[in-house]
Length: 392
Image 1 (cartoon, rainbow, N blue to C red):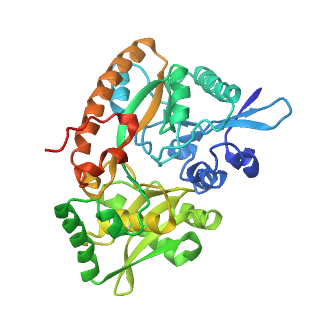
Image 2: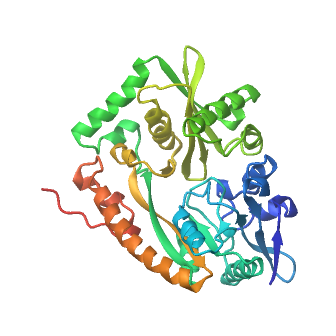
Image 3: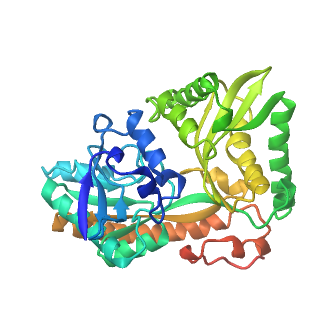
């Protein structure tokens, strides 16, 4: 099999890339990754230098691909290794650049080894390792891979790292109230009050797709989301050109929950949808509106999934407050290969301790879900192997 490194998605045919196993996921589509590139969001200038790997069969057919970037920093990845970089610095060594297989600015679990057969999958891993060697980087990282990719990468010697997100699962609910029926009475009452506060404030919410967004609305949505980044002291990862291109090339995948007061937009939640999953990504508001963040980013996302028959809702990283709104603690993973054997041994030991602690944290987090205890076990991620005490 023949491998090739490309520096831009323009070097591979969109239909050919999108026909690969796993590339149907919205964040792995040629259109999405190319929009990040052409808009200037993920480029060498922003620290995302593409080194995508292609594997072709002897006849020339594309058999596999690995989205890969040479990274000069760790921002926009959501798997935090700043302590590793600091340890390298104190030892007088260089941690950056390094190779990272990820979707820029997108902490969503999904395919990374875009190939079905074992031979091209192994070829992708071998090519990534060879590239790491030729570039002299410190490490190779694969972030948020789906389960089969994780198993393959771990079998090839990459070290697993466990983290947690909070995901909602659709158990065939007919309405939002049907979902709330599994809550304890106290938690159900609190969530209803949360939604009622938004309605009573006079705020109106509507669901839009990319096809509904003209240039004016795209500007409003970008400015609202940029305001949220500004409050935290840094510029947004995504620019207006990216949202405009995404609305153009993937209109059915882009979902925006827009809130207005007196006819003026005041907040938005920006999401992407796949075949069976809704992914919450960005939020922004022009002011402080009681409970509006929860309504746009969580409750209306659940409403959308129920209405559209989607199986899952992944609202993004962090946020233990999601537990009380019915989002389940869910294991997410990354895989790491450290070139320096001394650091590899030290980080491997540290990862083992971290995994044990996070597995216990996941178990404890499950005890804070709002559901009646009898409703919980079937909902939980078996990958975490929860051990819940019986209800008193």
